Picture 1 (spheres, helix red, strand yellow):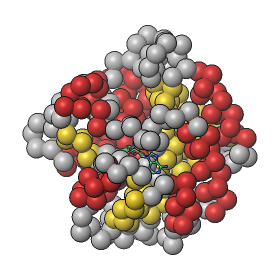
Picture 2 (cartoon, rainbow, N blue to C red; picture 1 turned 45 degrees about the vertical axis):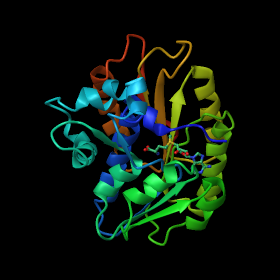
Picture 3 (cartoon, protein in one colour; picture 1 turned 60 degrees about the vertical axis):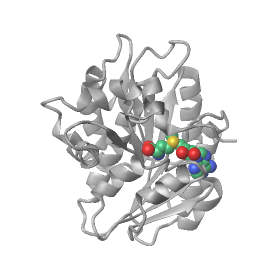
Picture 4 (cartoon, rainbow, N blue to C red; picture 1 turned 45 degrees about the horizontal axis):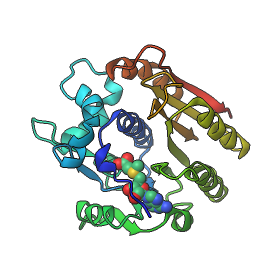
Length: 279
Ligand SMILES: C[S@@+](CC[C@H](N)C(=O)[O-])C[C@H]1O[C@@H](n2cnc3c(N)ncnc32)[C@H](O)[C@@H]1O
């Protein structure tokens, strides 16, 4: 039984890291004329109302996108991400684009996307969000069963984004297994896995498992908001990127400290961009 609803968390600091990083990868894919395919294994609803009861119950977005919205002097690397957020809003920040909507804003006519979503409450919202859009395929599916059918994509270029809620502990093992199987089918694809930082041992375990796949070129980018050993709740989050675009490591190493300051990270919170498994 799935109970997670992203509407409670949309636009929080974790979404800022994941969607800003996704936009950087898509920016890099757009540098070549050839089309690419984006596959979102855990798509969610696609768009969230920040004035909804759910969003206001936690108010998490105020400490995430809320801190960037009216800011001047934002590093230009965030342009694509912020353009995608602006595209669903007028003057006032009211809506937050989920990963599918962020990426859809950046697709060119030769690109396409596949969105997998299992939850029957999120699915109709996602279908409605992209109704009639010929570049988007929405599928009611369990990614553990259906992802393989899309790999490798015919374009042989693109990104698979794996973004579970981790409400079930086995999802840590699941992401590693999904990556392992997918990489066997499509070794040159780019993969991004989002993960929460609740405490360092659980992250170390995930990193060990990722290294244990034997897959090379894995970069991790982590954004801490509180010190890792703070009990109860998410102290930070990370993205593990397989086959990331050239120089994404250097870009993230510069951007993460800025993001951390801007999002009000506490003393003792660390950010890093480093290779878990180099080439
Ligand atoms: C963290 S949310 C996704 C947020 C979205 N990626 C974004 O960034 O806007 C996780 C989503 O995965 C869905 N989900 C959970 N297990 C799934 C599975 N096995 N296959 C496909 N979707 C799943 C949940 O219903 C939920 O909507």
